[in-house]
Image 1: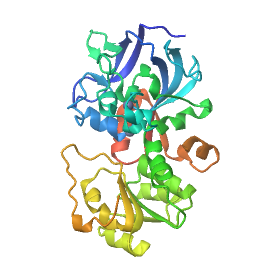
Image 2 (image 1 turned 60 degrees about the vertical axis):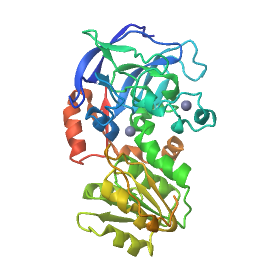
Image 3 (image 1 turned 120 degrees about the vertical axis):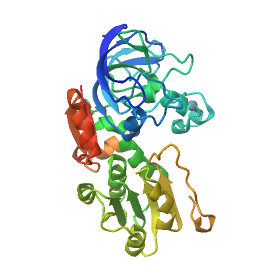
Image 4 (image 1 turned 90 degrees about the vertical axis):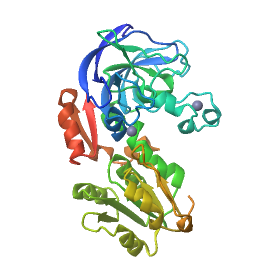
Amino acid sequence: MATIPLQTRGLVTEASKAGYKLMPVVLDDMRPDEVLVEMKYSGICHTDLIGANGAYDYILEFPAVLGHEGAGVIRAVGSSVKDTNLKVGTSVILSFNHCGSCSNCNSQHPACCVNFEALNLGARRLTDKTTSARLQDGRRLVSQFFGQSSFLNHSVVSKYSVIPCPYPEDLAVYSALGCGFQTGAGTVLNSLRPTTDDSLVVFGAGTVGVAAIMAAKYLDLRQIIAIDQIEERLTISRELGATHTINTQHTPDFIREIHSITGGGARYVLECTGVSLFMEKMLECVCCGGCAVVVGVPKPDFILKIDPMKLLHENKTIQLHRSGNFPLEKLCTFYEVSNFDECIQDTRDGKIIKPILKW
Ligand SMILES: [Zn+2]
Ligand SMILES: [Zn+2]
């Protein structure tokens, strides 16, 4: 059992837009409602990259450690943590944080927690705004990004971020379930709940988009249309369930193409890119009575304008993997933490879909 204070290391962002540096970090304290986790894998998500680049400067202070798709092993459990599944040595997946006491948390909607932004992007304890971590020179380090700051080798995380993983041997591919995979799959399985007669358009065949495509394939949808500008991503989309693909570089009039394939518009459109063009055009891609959903993160100053005349429309993953219906491993590419820069470059070049760091 590891004890606090603890010397560890992490990919630190010292200031907004300063990039990431592997640095020694000290964890000073752990509260009764927190858990100490030794990270084994850290998925990298778009939100980490834009967070380090200033997207959340209105609430996120630096120096900070980002990362919110952690997977690892529990090394210590706070005295008030009641979940008896959380023991020292348990393999866990980390997800977003929530307060556990607001009206939305109490009605089983933790993703709508009224303190979501303060907890996950502010990345400090809600009670007194402190954090456990500091740099060796004494500077405090913001260290509960999405409850976890999983770019730390060891991290003091919120108890609400910790989910036991019943299959430790596959921890590597499950690490990204904490954000990207669950966002895509969860939107289809839990929010849209399409039937086999429905059609789904997915803008952006990255982690979230391909997870949505796999979920739609599992539900045996009639038409699953993947849209991207990188051909390799469209190829893997077809392998994993897309019935049609549209490369916007070759087919700029994607709206006409969607209408042609679906016969008048798709029942569901899922926007996973954050690109303003797709958000502005998504309502033109759904049929009457259809539904468009945005999960992509737009640029901070982007305001979506909607023409009311066009507004005719309103708006279980591990077990699926075990049964072969959610082949996550086909999306994951692993890198040693020391090769972080190469990993980021490959991500930016669109060579890989889900980058995961190995500690
Ligand atoms: Zn994410
Ligand atoms: Zn809450």
